[in-house]
Image (cartoon, rainbow over all chains, first blue to last red; front, side):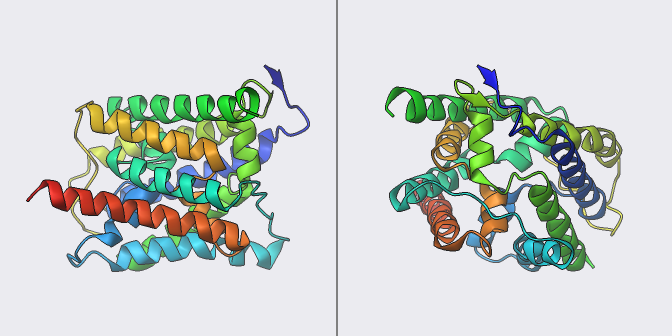
Length: 143
Length: 139
């Protein structure tokens, strides 16, 4: 392993992390819920039980972030190297996996670890381990 | 009020993803590429978020109602089973394939062109398949 010092952005990473932590904390206090994106989005696909509005609002807030950012500065454009087949496979795996595993990077990684949840620690180790292994295979073994 | 709070929280969350550049799959894959040139930024994103979240969740856990008066819905399950681990592994594989997890996918919708839209549609389809399988297994 070599560290990519030129790509490492410690200050914006830390500041962005603090913003994410503030958002998740505010949500726990204000709404009593976990700011887990996969759960919030996935819950929209269930028969409505009067809890759709806050879910839609949360998703719209996330999707609106680039527009709010653009008021102050040029929006950082995501670099997406995958082709269509890769994106479809990735999306299906992320969709099914996060729902079976009851969470993703936000619900387990941020909120769960903040709560010292053993479930979330196991889930985070599992998806990080699988992510490391997948990139290792795709970039260094089969590439 | 709950709806407005959710929108603002989603917005701030999304700004955090943009500021930390976790909305950029190439940067996330740089973190997952431990055998290549490794970008440790994501560790600091998680660290910054947990440093704020840890004390606040400890307070939230002890509250009978949320500040807006709703029932607390923080999870209490401690069960570690095959669903949790298997699902998380599937998610991790998908994360490693494209560098997208759910939040960044939604943030990238307006700035990531057809590629971000393709990922999000496939993710929604995956979530729909989960719901369908759930309904089938409970009948």
